[in-house]
Length: 330
Image 1 (cartoon, rainbow, N blue to C red):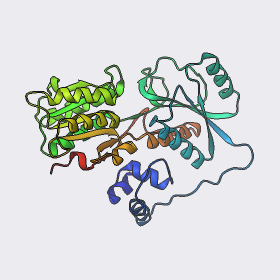
Image 2 (cartoon, helix red, strand yellow):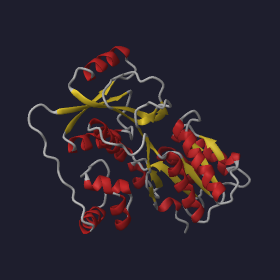
Image 3 (spheres, rainbow, N blue to C red):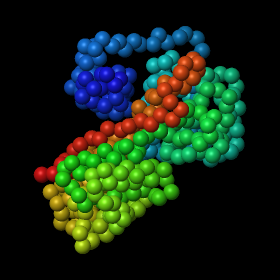
Image 4 (cartoon, helix red, strand yellow):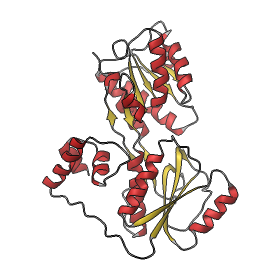
């Protein structure tokens, strides 16, 4: 993937999604064709798995809670596609804090019909004890455990993603860059804040605490905190939001002030949800690579099932910075 990505001028996640025929993320036809042409030119083949007859081979995915608009659905879709590409049927269980249901799921997974388990969290976090236990080969998706003997984990490189976003703003010439964060106790919040601060320090810009506002992932709170930022004696020239939905609240406050994006102030979001490309002006955003993480979890699990070496016990997947109108200096 890295060879093809470098030669085609795209990210590894784009290469993976194109070659696996994923429908979870929209990719331009011209980009898809460039990836295929580059792969062929470099001599890489993309063989299709011959699916076995009879009873399907099954992999379990266990998750605790999910809503219909949660971007983590991309990770589940990616895992389903990659499992089938490897001749497995992925069976998804959602126990939603129901202890009795969790016990039933555990009994089902340990019944002998399953080859492995992906234990997933829609929120990036460190786990205590897994509620559903199994002796099967196991991979943790979007979560991890601190013990040395824990299962391999697949996580988003949120610190790197935030670093890319702020570095992009700095390269555009912005110096006074604010940050709207999520809830302070969340791992995604702390990692994106670290990336924001590191990018500023590396550019010899001292992070200023009054430019950092907690907006709790809420568009309404982001609107209120943006109003506070714009009321400062030296208001920011750019705002990096920890989610695209918070960026929408930020947009509202900026418009209410009579300012224009990006002429008066730049905005960058995170997650690269459909709203980013459909907003006006279109929103620069960091891709949250859930689809690729789901695929990577299955690839790692298949390696464990087949007793093959794995790349790393803790794999962090980088998202691409998607540049759009909201951050490009006129």
